[in-house]
Length: 137
Image (cartoon, rainbow, N blue to C red):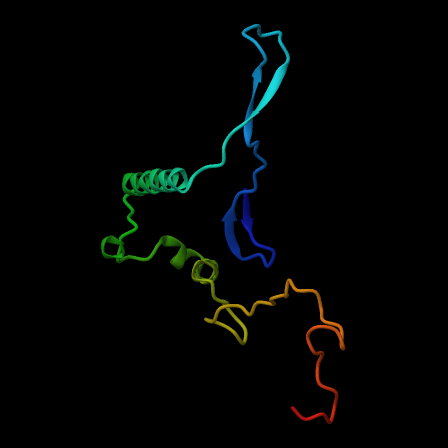
């Protein structure tokens, strides 16, 4: 389980390496060699079913702990962390909202550097290169 992204923002996520099949014995004899049997790719319906079951389980867990995904049912009192560690609470809140907590961009989403997947164009071939100084468009 990884708790932060590369910029140390709160981003709990998992990394997993999984097989797309199972190993079974070649025959009923447990001493027979194992063979790998590839499983079919999941359908959109399979994925939707897993997502629905996961959402239902998360809602049950939240209800069991007196919480809810419904903002109308949320608590009016702030969590203890706000009083005990206000700076940390502000960092958590900013991370959950996807905004910067301080600096010139406080309260705004971070700027992202986007790289093109296209190879760079060479002048004279394909796409035109940047205009030369003094050239008019």
